[in-house]
Length: 487
Image 1 (cartoon, rainbow, N blue to C red):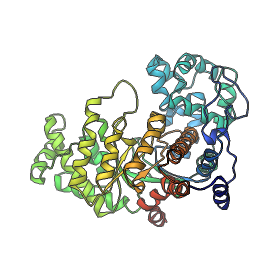
Image 2 (image 1 turned 135 degrees about the horizontal axis):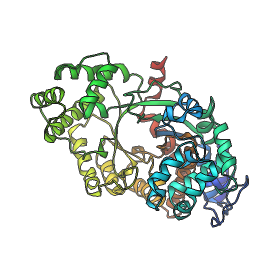
Image 3 (image 1 turned 180 degrees about the horizontal axis):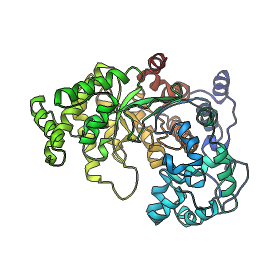
Image 4 (image 1 turned 120 degrees about the vertical axis):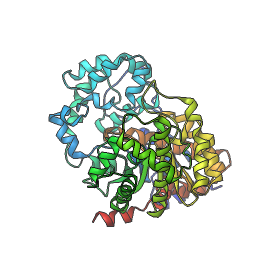
């Protein structure tokens, strides 16, 4: 193991200072019972020795952010004056509680009608805070709410939210909605190289972003999997085709991949929200009459016929991913929202994952969100299967402690090349900073504990940090190809 002096010299050669701010190092606030305002970081004891050095290295290293749902800047700017038209939360403190935080507030007892009221115009920031505060107090120590606090501090210089500062925070948030906001927040504040974005508006199979170098795009292939009658018609319109038969539908799907794969960073499905990942092998001859029944009689198709078409289309799209060399991202594990998660179905995800890994050995599968709360099985899949990767996106704020344990256990069990360690998974860009800070804290803690336990040598830390935060993503995802094809 490197001596203390040797470590200093080694990290110094990389140009890394010893100091680290409280947020960047991820220290917990010493006293959070009474909200305070001001520009200082939440009070904490800074890391020392090994942890100080590793925190500095992790802070300096950029993330490749492998999963976001971020809105386009143009839509945000248009939503300033007419949020109803763009269906966005109002640009005030309600925005900060509109994604993920709203779930913990609901579970803590906040009424859905009040959650809707804080998203909409019509209430002043202090009135919105009066609705939020009782439930914020109950949920403030969760990852979702900690993330709100850290983001507020990093962007607006306020240590916490309270009645005295919610108007000022709202004014700063609104003032920040302007051209260049994504780049300023993601690169200047979060130290993120680029993001991989999955549009979840339902409007696009592939979003024509105005910032392709910063916001690379996934193909959202859920509409190709269902497919409902509405999906069939929508995809047909986007491809300028009339899918009047099963054959023309498959031609339409082929056209989707031909049109978008050259510029896509990956393809993504979140169909695990509506069914298991147990996609059976269905022959084309069996799928065809069921699809055409769906096409001609959309209201009268038995559920088993619908599932059979989904099964066929999943395997068809995976073969397309192999043809076009696109990684396949699949939602696994925990559900967004509240009051709607069937844990029994989620428990089946790991076994279903391994079935598809064996069925498509030339495909590259990325299983997202560490399959929480079944993350041990995700580690086993990555250890056993050469075509399995695991993504820690979102996990750092679902359960930060479980994510630290997961990272340590993954590195002890599976090749370090099989892991991606950050994706903010947010719609509002203003909530990515806190999440990136929590992830950096967790990575620092996990690596330092592995060194302190004698499992890895201090000299291995710089290579691991580079690999986990950006190197693996650059090896898996062809960023240069996407940029060449955007032109």
